[in-house]
Amino acid sequence: MNNINAILDDIRPNRSALFSFFSMMPKGGDLHHHYSGSIYAETYIDYVFQKDFYINTNTYEIAKDIGKIPTPNLAEWKKISDLPNTDQIKLKLLRNWSVKDFVKGAHSSDEHFFSTFPSFGSPSKDNYVTGLKELKNRAINQKLNYIETIFISIDLKSIVVSNESDLDTSLLKAQKNKDETELDEILNKIFNNYERLLNDVAIAHNEIIQRHHTDSNIEDENFKIRYQNYTARFKQPTDVFIEMITCFQSCVLSDLIVGVNIVAAENGETAMRDYWLHMRFFKFLEQKYPTVNYAIHAGELVSGMVQPEYLGKHIRQSLILDNLKRIGHAVDIIYDNDFINTISKLKQKKIAIEINLTSNEFILGVADDMHPVEIYYRNGIPIVICTDDEGVLRTSITEQYVLLAHRYKLTYEQIKEVVKNSIVHSNIEDAALKDELLAILEKQFNDFEDEIQEFYSPIVFTDKNILKFQNVAFH
Ligand SMILES: [Zn+2]
Image (tube, rainbow, N blue to C red; front, side, top):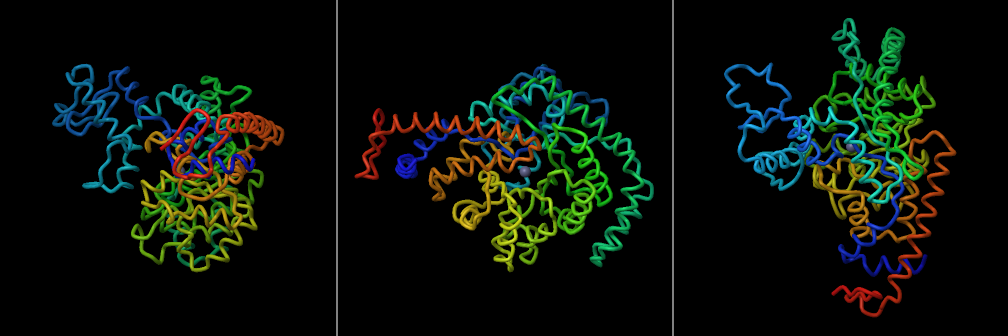
């Protein structure tokens, strides 16, 4: 092991050497990634070409049919097969649906990032079997053996909430007054009124996930996938609560669905306004469903994105929760004016932090020593390395480990612990499965370490600028 720590230290400044090292290294699990943002745009493009979608020749929006397009605009829409320059269309779609060639200008990077999701909406919702197979193949290729995918939203069209706007008003009033008793009364009322109806919705949702899971047939002895449900924080309070109840309910009823999450831009107006409410919703539901594990996106904020007094609070506010397992992003902790207390509580509660380096760099402009990854690590908070949206961001889990090792001074031994965290802190409920995945990982690490030590030895430690391996020399 000491030898591999030394090897990693030697190759640390050289990113190409790091890529060759981390391409081979086992990586356990990826616990934070969104299904639709993890599929590369090429897959969606192939699909719309295969199905001969319509395309707006000015805006490059796509549509399966144009029945609802207003007549004056119809001239802009053409079948893809009727257009001459398909290479040009493909390139344009690639740029619209990912960060490829993105240059800041008319749009900010976070605006561009979040705009990609509705643009590829239709092909991402049509083709789950291809998408899941792509995730599995990439995971295996990158030496992952477990992924916990934030998958598809719950279809709540059948649920009509009576007096919804009155309920929203009451919830917002309780939030304004920070009146927990009043809030709990409203939440109890909603819960009791809708629990049974939502149970049916949860069953239907679970059947859909089970079907995609079975049809894609992606599990094998070395690879497992589990799914997370999610609610979107930009919705109105009652909608979020109803969606959250269904998310929890669905987890209770399924072995495949192992977690709940709350997603979408945290700096949005509604998301910022209702953060306190969302935490109280989780608090309420963790008591109703104590066996359900969940994670949240929180602290995905940076100076300049919101007013300074809104920074450094969301992570602290989440500490009212007892069953919260992980926090995604968590970069704004550096602005917390009660930082030491927050860090201590995170540690005490054994909450793991999901680190998304490329995502934070692109969306927030947070990288290098402005990223708190070392703060978490050095204070004994477990971290896991994740991709977030590798398709949109055109990255990979290997690249995330390269960035970790290149920018931060974790030893090989410490990185190995981080990899193990990705199984230990997963939401897998079946203890035997967790042990099995940890045993597979252990064996993969043994093989990797044998191979690495053989190949890289003897290393010349005398000159740090010239790394001489048995077969390769870097200058
Ligand atoms: Zn995310």
